Image 1: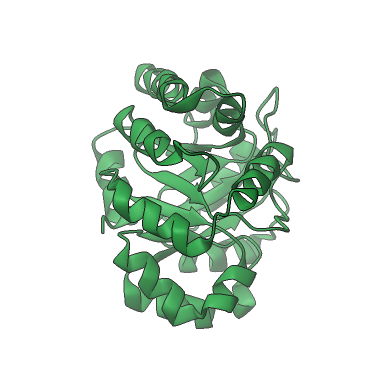
Image 2: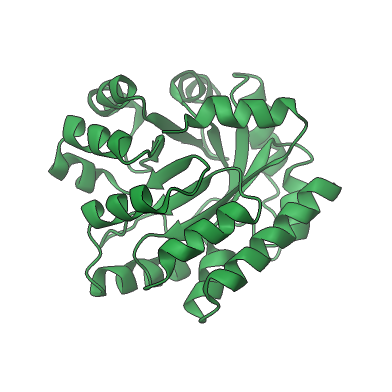
Amino acid sequence: MIALEPWLRARRTEGRKLLIPYLMGGMGDDWVESLQAVAAAGADAVEVGIPFSDPMIDGPVIQRAGLHALDRGATPARVVDDVAAAAPGVPIAVMTYYNIVFRAGHRRMARSLAAAGIGAAILPDLPLEVLDPWAREADAAGVATVLLVAPSTPEDRVGRICERSRGFVYAVAHMGVTGERETLGHDTEDVVRRIRGATDTPVCVGVGVSTAGQARAACEVADGVVVGSALVRRLLEGGGPEAAADFVGELRAALDAG
């Protein structure tokens, strides 16, 4: 396992802006090749979605990818096994929903992620107030639990979220579901500023970051970006690993130039 937070901190110390692309696990026969391709193209870590039938924070593109993966027979165990076999050489954070974790059991899920070399998990529908049963098992297994701060998050809650978040703090650029946007959220700078006031943990902006220019703009205030729908759309349109690598390479070049 590559531990997510030390890895990201080391790259930040080097002056590198962090790039975390998102892929939906199991969405195509070549999804593992796409995972390997984006890692080779300059991703600092990769977020891998475990498909779920009722994805409350995911927009149309990610929903479509998840349903396609489920139709193809994707399961949490199969996605985790695929990640283990891929050995992409960068940290992996899975993103899914608490029903899947609850069904598997906290300890079983945390240990299965760790055994597969997966160093982090993002569970957007698991509130801070009931996080501890999962987080204790995740901590014991060495799996970081990444938490989200949104534009609507009250100030006192920002501090508590940042105190508990591991790996990085996920700064939500837009209220609403994931998806490509023409512009960054006007609250992005404020969200990042409030997180910075509460923690030194790396801060990455996601939800709506869609282009190289937006990624560069977000990284003027944040340590990095998470880019999902824009990449997944290219794969749904038949782009394959080469198109995924080209897009991630474009993002990497923009961040490095900025």
